[in-house]
View (cartoon, rainbow over the protein chains, first blue to last red):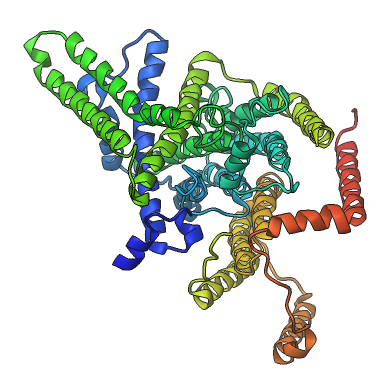
Length: 430
Length: 173
């Protein structure tokens, strides 16, 4: 056991490729925990950001600035009565949220957080991600049908029509990015998620800027389609509360409902990481080909520490700005502890970055590199997650016929055109 | 290039996946509720895609999931919109052609048994090298190189089918 644990350290392959099951399990646990924590954090950020967009304060009472609100919510959902409607199809009602959750979390097997920081690397990586994430809609449709109620059924039907329509444009946009991976000496592309990022590294350009503006258009098509795929505003017709109360999960309560929420946010992170991998250079830091001198590498390795230092500074400002009233004593102390923890994390990352600068052992160097890779990947995904909130705060919901019109008459022709022009330009350039 | 991963617990996964596929298949024809049948069909199709993975054919496995996930979605919609569930549950499920079904099943079983018994002589012994690492690339080269004509004919056929469906469904275009 210990030998198989140690033998993987310093390997340059992901555990699935190296055939190390122990480390694969460790990676799975890390990713599962990380995604769950990210969903909790996203829950808090979404409520706060939406509130500030609308000139409100958002959650303020549970913990300093409402930091403990997601935990309180989770507790409430766990303790809530779990109702299955009498006329519902018991088994399908029970299994629907689990299918959504399974589909959302299974795709993380191939998400490349770094050249070896992934559970596994598959020959069919992007195909696997698209296929398994499209299984998630089955959970929604099953939930809507099994509830045996009008609004959930309408929500489920809308959701399935929407998914089928936008998957086409999404798939064509993905194909045009995969086409770009084949523009090398041998002329063979790749579907592997790690291979796609490495192709961008070799060609020295993120695919969003390749054949400007072709890559950019394909990226925008994908960025729109992925909002529709995850049923988020302005495409959240499946749960349009003004028309369908709560859409497909109207009849769900308590833990089961929270599983739907978890699946939705996990799916959002998953599609964002597809976009990051295909067009935004995955784990690569900005300008990986120009700024690759050791000094630049060191500068970029300071970014994780700087980011957490900045967050700690913001939290300290929050402590300063808290009202001096004794009523806020506990809240102020709690926020100070949170800020201190963030600061400690920043300090730790700084120490790792500086100590790892001239590390001679391959394991230490690999660890420092790994932090950089994961940091840049997560930072790019985080930008997308913020965009999701921004869309929701900014745009009103589509009407259903408008949604179909955009999907079939605008997005599909454009993505098809981009694919054809990309192929022609690729042949001409070669 | 990359170190190949040795297969783990192959017989276990083979029996697990084929068992799932068989159970799903039986449920598809025995469930009275058409939605339950569609769900059982998903189980079968996913198990079959797992078997493709075990045969070192990842591309076929991935396509199986993508194509049939969408296909089952549409099946679901048909069931919800076109089938009157409350009536079908009460109706008799097997009609009088079951003797023919039994004959067909016995014939198929006989075929399987005979293939199993003398399967060694039926198939050429030297197997093709398993190209797992570049399986997808090989399929791409084959489809767009050696079998280009057949591939294009098939896609033309599908295009005509799509156009025909649209024209038949929509009176005014």
